Length: 326
Image (cartoon, rainbow, N blue to C red; front, side, top):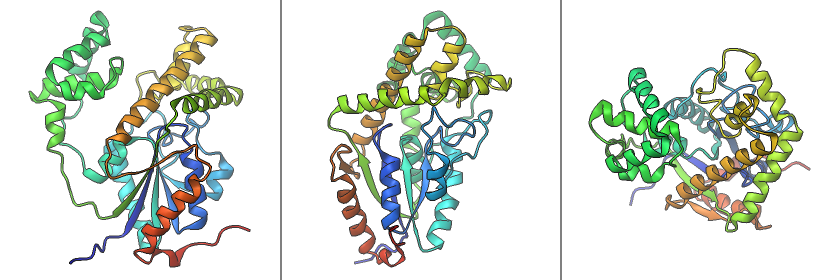
């Protein structure tokens, strides 16, 4: 019987506001883990409050790779993430430590472990035509069109998720094949790490919704709108950039355009964050290889640590553990 000699890695996944960062930092105190962010918004510099980015003191004590690596004017994709993450993980493994990838961007985790589909490049003319059509019909109608052409993809995408609906329809027009069909043929290259997947999955959505609301109110108190005003004042950013389409930033941008009252802005932002969490939870439930943990249980750190200790101990990884602080 062959023994899996691949180096180890840990994925710590969960919906927004589920406590992933705090748990990752706690685990890194006890085990030889180096943190790597898996978050499509934390890559952007100057977007700190609305992304719930760990504060400078936390990042100084618990460095996270792949945070603050892009300007908001620069799009960042799953392919970019995979290109950046693999060498970072290789460097961590070469030091005799274990990469702990922590975040909520499921597409990035999937791209990293399973590879990427051979999808066509974006076509500006096709996108512009689809946007014009959506302007006449509305994105729910475009989603209904997608549901007729590619039911599997439409089921995974919200009816108002303009970016993803547009991309799925664009792929059909450019290739004559559906996105779900092309994704079945993605490159399943051998992933060079053996992975333990830990997923924070709340049993009580009400508690998660409360945390989302409280966290957003804390963001407002911390100056979130001033942060967005500073981004707008640069003059080179616009609402169609991936950075500005991030949850909370899109609603703040529209609010500063005069499209909502303060109360409407708050409600829309919290609702959008809840919808994001719902999509993240749906994705996590589909990952049959993940160990599920209830984030609201007081024994979460101990239970997660037991899983990590077993995983590392099986391969002799514990000899590199750094001591816990006094």
